[in-house]
Length: 220
Image (cartoon, rainbow, N blue to C red; front, side, top):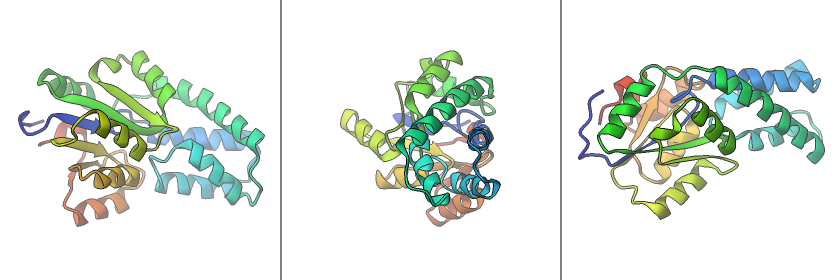
């Protein structure tokens, strides 16, 4: 990784597919939970396609969408049970998943050079903090943001606490691209683990954003 620390003061990271190799894990957990709730296989396939297309959007939004796919009225009791089941299984799986290649190396280099690091994710904030503590990652980050806040909510909070000038965003999903665009942040699309490579490659090329394979390719 090559960077000039005087050019940037902070880096915002998405989590799934950028810090943790967890995109496929999330898909598996959704499938397991929906199977346990006896959801029809065709609905599960439709839901999983939706989940992959809209990576970075929280489970709180996605499980509400499930009722539309099933052509059912929203049911708060079932919704809450889905969230609890997903959270329990997701936290267990998160602890098992690997970091993306060169992640620790890059985080350490950036931190050593005085660059402030943040996480802005669609994953549950409480879970992220537990997992980052478990994996000894929390030491690298000034703040970890997650759902039920949206990524725009999280960036709004950050913008009130710090100047986002000289800040870049590294993500792998449309929600990352849109959040970075809203705040006019330089965006790096990390491609290797993305669930939506084609659309993200097209958007990145169209808007002149850099495409990287892993964090080791991050250059500013």
